[in-house]
Length: 116
Length: 114
Image 1 (tube, rainbow over the protein chains, first blue to last red):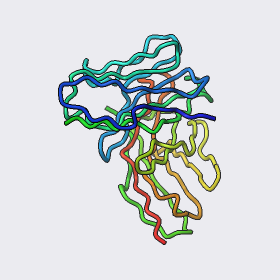
Image 2: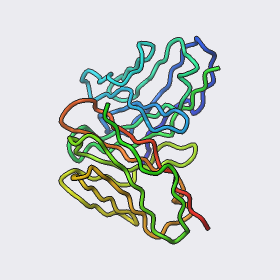
Image 3: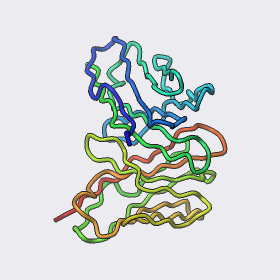
């Protein structure tokens, strides 16, 4: 079946501009996660959505970062007033849920963001 | 903060040999562990996971071992193939609270020599 999809695959923007990154989770998955991967680094958790519950925003690095999930499916990560240090690969993952046996996270291909 | 780390950044093995990738974790409360494979330009691909009530779990050509006493996780890949060349990440999670995301290590680059 279809996996997690993300768009765009690549994004080049100028410092100070806003960007929106989109994630389409696996159909039927209620949990959705955003991570950031800087060059040669591991993944850094950003935000988590579970169904209609309030999101876990504990990983967002600053108030320039925000995310929403409409209708419990598609999610958009927005970065306002981008900075050069925001350059990274932004990865989205989804899982069936949060409970035991449901927590395996499946990742999309990522969006490579370059801020000039 | 607590994090998951790796012992070696690069591991080179001969094609056909077995490989072992190690990982140390620091949060003794973590109860879920997972290994991912990431090829260049792609997202992480799920390999195998294990919960803390187990110490070993096997998949196709892969085995994960968990030693909670020393907080150590390893991934064994049998009869390595060229397609196994990638960066391998271990990750941990505590299901009982705290952040809902996985905590990742920095990765081990596995190189398969012909």
